[in-house]
Image (cartoon, rainbow, N blue to C red; front, side):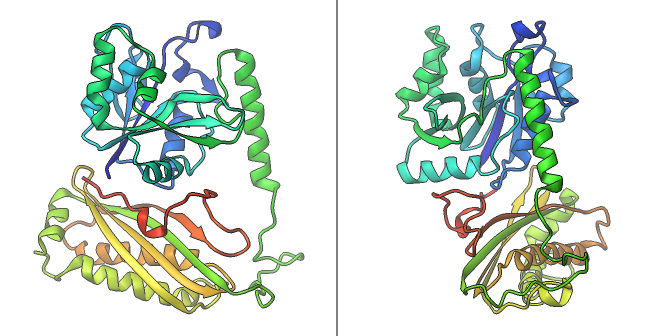
Length: 374
């Protein structure tokens, strides 16, 4: 399943001086920058991001993504999605307006779970108050002919197309996707953002410090033993010639990904020896998967760890990913010293007091998180 995203930059905000809504600043950053960051933080990554805009194209191009113009004069979300589907080779397209700066990190995860459960070709976000947010959706590229037919007859309503396609709904928290149409709306959102940042800085204690500020290993003896799993992911970018050597198995040191897989498994088992305050855990399973993106020239490593214990295996999964990627670097550094490791993050954890993270009742198993790359 390949997945691209398109951000509908939107036309002028008439009640805000006629400026493009995507370029309006929220707390010192253009609105579209917030949405792009929200896409990058998704627990299921997208392969490419596209921007749909009909004005101020150089400004939008400055964000480093392809900028598309509508082919139909009536414009609107439907025309923007049409242009994106023509430009994108992906199976699925995530659609977002430019004024949703607070995207939940499990948005794609929840969309995908709903699609898997229903076999539908489209999914749409709605909030707990019953409001449907049609421009926040994900749809299959097989719907392109439907969009062409609608646009050729002068239709521009996205909701009618998605209804006809049998789109399913996923419900999110009320107020999460509030419309931003006036300066007052922006001011309220800036205040909400400031409050969220303050909470992030001072809202919780760090468990690895005592009340007096001394570091210690957290005592978990009173916790119950439960099954706990965690999935982490990271990438290493390299020269195209280096990637071709890895794929062909022609590297002089042998099977690069095979060795990196063993290194990742060994690292998961040795995590408590590397992280000072990490508890030693009996691992019951470690899976390591590598996928290759030839377009962006990187290898992505995804690791899932499984145990039954009193504390989670997030650190084991994260450590395994990084050692696996470092092993690739070590084996290929003779031909490419400029490789870059990045985007290492936790995708999902299950079990324990906090339950599921990300919090999605319909989250698929950890093994189903990987999206094959082009």
